[in-house]
Image (cartoon, rainbow, N blue to C red; front, side, top):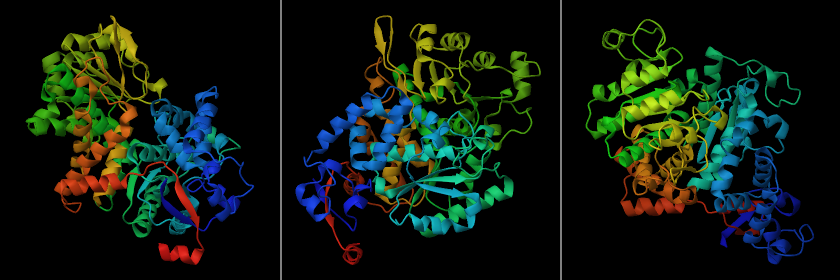
Length: 567
């Protein structure tokens, strides 16, 4: 049993608190001291017994959304049991608590809402955000995940239903990175919704108003950020699933004000770059040898492009050479400098139209993906477009004609939005393709071999990054920390030694993976001067100490005045 924990709670109030509740695992002594006698069945169980019962209840659920609802209810009842169950069945349950099932949960959030979790900050209450943060009665929050619900996965505006994303992300912080769930806070900035289905739903629990925009929106976010800086100044703030027009500019605006990052931009970039680095090692080539097409030039695609370019520079290319190796495709087709109204980050990688016309005889109009693959002689193709089936057989075969081992990553979530199915990509390329996906897929048999499909899942990155920040005491987040995370993950790829293996490590060892990433991130933070310099041994000890383990502590009742002295 872990160390003792003190609480002023007792009786039914204690059993209603998921951070302290142990259910049938309370000992006889605890039951007497905490006024629990008679409130529980008499047999005292071990955590292992409870896990077995919970798993049995999980397995009889007939749909993924029912399983999701069951797990969320368990989380609201007993956090230790919830995380121990997940830890023992990570591969099976991660797709249930997060992608792809969390997308369905967000769409049905109002219907499945049972018990409060996190903070709903609505625009009409924007001048009371400090009071809201005080209402959580916890000044030890280490990580906040915040969304405004406008761009949930590939499903668009879900309004208040977007709260499912911060809840799910923070569950992964605790499961994969060992962040204490008592020190996490999911937040929904309810700026309204333009989803007519939500607005017309009599059960919708959010603010029933069209989305605010422009100065009103910016003022709302500013009030939230300033309240966090005042009330929780040492907290890591992660932005999640904001619309493309807001995601990057909010990150740029606040990245030097507090410890913050955007997982859609930076986390997605790091895990995708790790996958590409692993694939490059498997193909025995260099990153600088690749011609890479980003299919989807929104916040996620641009983040990947920028980190890939930075990795090429570290490999020896100059900035122009690195940028020239990356091609962007978005709604107008292949992006070039004659297309109006490109974002600054898109303009950086846009090709010269006059050169394209002269070299390839292109005519005015949209240059589609297949033609771009042939023009670029693309060797790697990464999809963040949410356009299901966009990577066709012709595209895959054109990629295979350009190199021996093409790299194709259909990353869009949920599964129904994936640009291609791994089985098709392998069949179309006679097993030559190296695949990473955004959603989980089963292993595929081809030509007598079984190929494991690696899920290019942000959960490989952000929990380790968060742990590294918490353990090192970093006060800001840098691109170098994400580069360190990507390289650490790539070094742990099983495909480097087994070409049939996944590009990414098994989720069964995700805590070990996160620990190694955290050490790399903490070291990068120290090198950047944003964390106190220590020896490697001290950093490792601090990182281990920061990892919460789902195990029961002995619960001791203590009067309120004495508990305040202990704090």
